[in-house]
Structures are given as structure tokens and as C-alpha cells.
Image 1 (cartoon, rainbow, N blue to C red):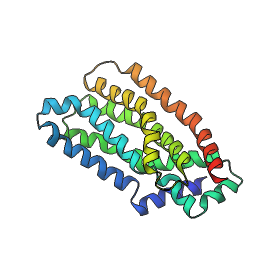
Image 2 (image 1 turned 180 degrees about the vertical axis):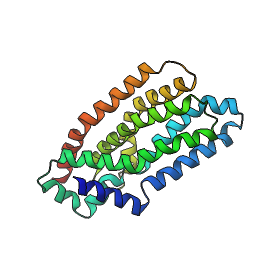
Image 3 (image 1 turned 90 degrees about the vertical axis):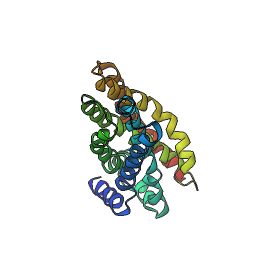
Length: 218
């Protein structure tokens, strides 16, 4: 499992399709927002939490189709399916590799980009906390969508259509935590719901993803 994790991280770094592409997309979204809504600091500060969360979500979405596609094309996925390791563990490791190369860089970059959107001071901590809790759920849900569409030609659009509705609850509660934190309101309820969504996704979806991969490999 450790060798698989290191291999996936190295492939993501070498290909540049993981954190490099996601970070560049995240930066472009944040830079474009002031051009669209105007440079007024009060307006930007009010929408900053939602924009940063939406940008992070879309940036995660970019690299989902690569999670299993490369292994499927070169036959590695068949070898992993026949190896004496549980497919659920393989899926969990791939989700962890995706989060380390895509979600974690976004978590670290979001507070810096929050400065560009005039995010209120108290919001920086809660934006980071909400992304740290919510982005693992995005990676696990994305793995589930990638498992359903592995082997399909031009399955990227279908993958987006499957995953985006599942991302909505995470987006709602994640942005709500950051918004309430920026306005110095209590964040306990949305943060608990976000944590529950993330824990439920991490606990259940690797089993569903493994079942989907086994069916697609038959």
C-alpha cells in the first residue's frame, strides 16, 4: 500500500496533472472573480468564502478522470485487482494520493488567495479548517465517480455529471463554515455536518468504488 501511495504521488507530480493543474485553475478562478463582480473590497469579502470553496471544488474535479484511467490503460488496474490486497484498500490509497496531490495544496493555498478576495480576518482560520475537513470527502467521492466510469471512452463529462450532485452537500456546509467564521458567528453545526459527511464518505464509498471497479473489469 505504501509503495502504491508513493507511486501515485510521483506520477501526479511528474505528470503535472495533479496539484499543478489544480492550483493553476484555482488561482485563475480567484483572479477572475474581481473582474466579474468589481473590485469593491466589501463585495469581494462577502462572497470570498463561497468563491474559494467553489474554486477548490472545481479544481479537484479536474484531475478525477486520471485516478484510475492510467492504471486501466496500462493494465495495472487488472494486476491490482488480482493482487492479494483488498480493492477497498487500493481505492482508499488512491483517494489519499489524490488528496495529498490535489486537496492538500488547495487547503494550503486558499488562505493566500483569500487575501486577493479581501476575506475578513477571522475567516482565514475557518476557511482552512473547512477545506481540511471537506476536501478528503471530495477526493473519496471523486474516486467513486472515477470507478463508475473507468474504461469508458470520453467518460470525463459523465464523471462530472455523476460527481457534481454528490459534491453539493459538502460545498454547502463547507462554504457555510467559512462564511460564518468570517462573520464571527458560531460554526459548530455546519462544521459537525461537514465532518459527518466526510467521515461517512471515507467509511462507505471505498467499498462502493471497489465493487464498481470489479464490475467494470469483468
